Amino acid sequence: MTLFPSSGVLHNLSRDYAPAIAAFESALALRPSDYSLWNKVHDIHIVLVLVLLVIHILILVIQYQWIKPRNHLCVRERAGAASERLLPLE
Picture (spheres, helix red, strand yellow):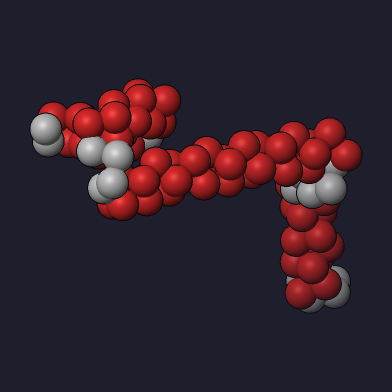
């Protein structure tokens, strides 16, 4: 009886969500009135939706270049110009 929920918990902890859902659904077939199993299945579904949402947002950020890559050359040039101002005039 506790094999399926235990297997589901282990899969969930290892972020292997599809087998975790399958294990919890197998446990629900044996104990359909166990609310904690329903909660775990719904929690995993919520995590999957959030993961897919984050992946979609990252794709949009990369596609539309909403975050510009850091230009290290520009930073070095600014640091060089600042250090030149600190040097004594000859």
